[in-house]
Length: 164
Image (cartoon, rainbow, N blue to C red; front, side, top):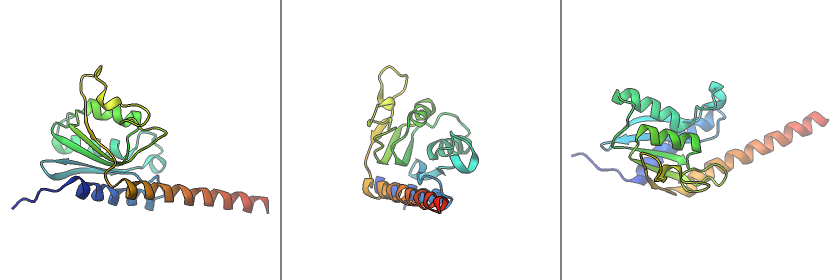
């Protein structure tokens, strides 16, 4: 019997990829793409590691999904990502024709799925993405908050050591 998984289940999977990013000292954002109740692609932030400003979790997952499906259009796919996409990634989702986006934590500084703008549902564009936000928001937000708290402490310690 083929079990149907819900948004919480898939977001927990995306969080596993966020932890992979954290393990390599990247901003801990993870993304997965699901089609027909199957995980077909995944990614996590690698911008620093790859020296690539476009190596966001969503970008990596979408690229992988295109290869898996042998199509640049990701029809009937859902992207789960632990942080609300930025404008670059939101534009990617429109161009790739993702059907649905599910995100965890809101991003008040760069979020383009409703926080600072809603690029994904702009009626002037030729495709709109269904959006469900704040799934496992506390867990998704906590991993990012803790990462930046540690990073600020490390920077403070380095500055202190440099003065001595």
